[in-house]
Length: 264
Image (cartoon, rainbow, N blue to C red; front, side, top):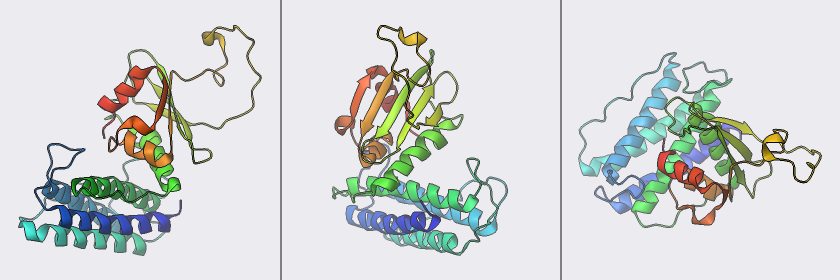
């Protein structure tokens, strides 16, 4: 996806998030984050938006902590959220394409990184706000959802803080059924997960009866396969929707591991 597409998604979902927050009210519970009320969600997103804006506008080369939110009344929360969101959109629109700045993950383009990261951050929390308001979820474009699965698997879960660990190496295949090429193999071990974007290639069929451990690596089945539409994968892997719409085959314990430890 292009930078402009991420920024436009950020613009739209930020507005929808604020609308849902206004509708639900500051005391509404956030289903995916039971310890949070809407005011906590608004403060979190508002701080993150301002944090990313500062990094982009100033071209900061080292990480900083998000600034604390001001002492806001409940009536001031949503306007404060809207202002921070607006400033982030302007910052990303106006930043030079060759922006140099610190990023959470290695990247060739810090501008593309921050546009992508903030678009997905805002989309996931827009879902939180709409769920809290008991509103219908705004559909996600399948290409954007597939990109979000990629960022989650190949990006965020590559970090040391990922809790997806296994004592014995295991593989999980994740596939979006409605986006060609949206197919990943996640290698689990006692280290941070390592994800490979799967590129299907023709391979000779193994001889019937060949033990699995003697198969070439490119034809070994994954220990667990998780499949579904890109939007359903995106929201389920972020633990924003139940996994009912997904198809899970193989070792069910690996799917349970994700549900228990996959939070970021």
